[in-house]
Image (cartoon, rainbow, N blue to C red; front, top):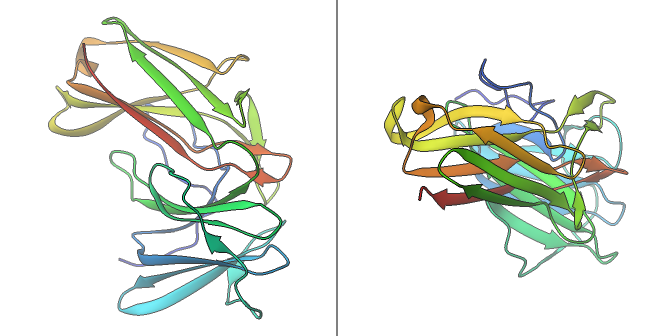
Length: 224
């Protein structure tokens, strides 16, 4: 599969609003991804595509570019558990860094890099039989509104909901829609008959807060 640099993390189905960027989308279909970070806070993401190794630099600000770090990697592996993560690291200034493979039904899996301090992005999700309700938080605070990308684009923050075993995909995940959390970080969606499934999951790309690229979050629940 031909690799391309992404300026947004995902293309979203017609049902859903455009995807917001918080973690930085680097590539789709990436194999054997790795993460390195130098002392200035520039991250190098590398992966395999078409039998060749590729690498991309994500700066503290501005748009990234293809290239490799000119200085040594100062990051260390951490024990922090993060959904969809292929690498979670920490630099001496206690910044946390992560590489995640974010997959949403019908879309190429996106390799994203994030950097932040404090508690990561978290989701809750409840199915009461008629509605899916939940919350999104980052560093313990509600996520709502808009994020600004490293390229200066202002995008809305969404939580993407999927069903498993619903009529559109009996043995696979199906994208339902993207929902924008309210001011308190909560969201609620009425379950249509076409969304009646055995399991549900919510995925968030995380907000961009004060230059922090929050990590993605995911939660999966069984239907009652």
